[in-house]
Image 1 (cartoon, rainbow, N blue to C red):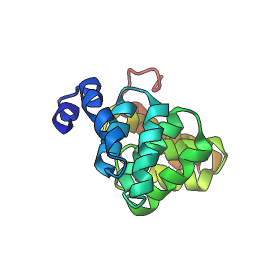
Image 2 (image 1 turned 60 degrees about the vertical axis):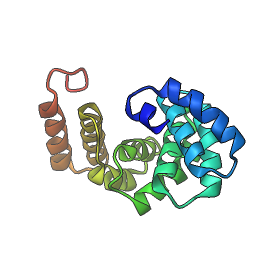
Image 3 (image 1 turned 180 degrees about the vertical axis):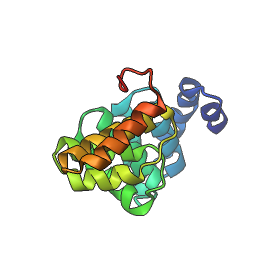
Length: 168
């Protein structure tokens, strides 16, 4: 199943993982991998179920909490996503990609200082996500009244990918 995940075959990995997770209620790795695969397949409800099981076994692993936060965020359940992503921020802020989602939740709830703090250290695995982080960070600084930092981040966002819709 791990090899299938690495090879970019999440549907095949799910076929192997689902029966294993069903038969092994205490296997944190099976539930985690099933949740990861379901997130990749955009089955966020199914991912949340599997990841909640993994979290019940091991609540201290940031990647379990990150994937669970992603599932909840993608379902629009920000109240449940927030504590999961805050946990990741507190324990493993170097984790790629969680910062954008957490910063977006804070920004949407007009909590601009926490949005700035999270987005300022956010690590992205993809250029498009990095561009979104810079854009949101620029907007956050604008809301905080720091026009110089807003301008700096928005210019960096445009320079990163000038031809994109976001840059325009």
